[in-house]
Amino acid sequence: MKKVITQIAQTDEKIAPLILRITLAVVLWPHGAQLLLGWFGGAGYASTIDYFKGGGLPYIIAFLVIMIQFFGSLMVFVGLYTRIVAIAILIMFIGMIITAHWPIGFFMNWTGTLKGEGFEYHLLVIGICLSIILSGSGRLSLDGLFYKISNH
Image (cartoon, rainbow, N blue to C red; front, side, top):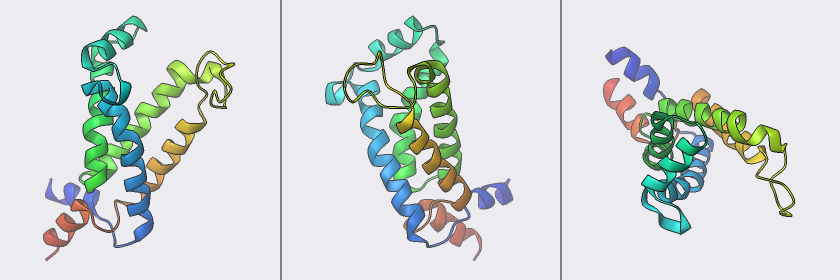
């Protein structure tokens, strides 16, 4: 088990993964705060659960989306189990495209003429997640610290 954790935490001191990690966390966390706490004009936990259930998604999916966006983004920010969380975010965003955004099309709804938002933003998040999964969390991460400790 220790070997698996060490492999997951393996990273280097490159700055590019740090930039991607911080960008992803800073963009995703406010959305999680909207869903969980009702901050930034969000609906809060109970209303978000009801919204997802009203759309035909089970409670567990709604719960996981809220937790991944709020707590997962914090984990990505500090670089803790970053690859695992990036996989969860990637799966979540693929699910968002499939369940809600694909029928709208590629583009965001800048002009307000569409009945929802397209999936271009989601593709950016997926690309960031793939980069983090492949490279690790980079400089200034708890993963990097744990990796160094386990190899000395």
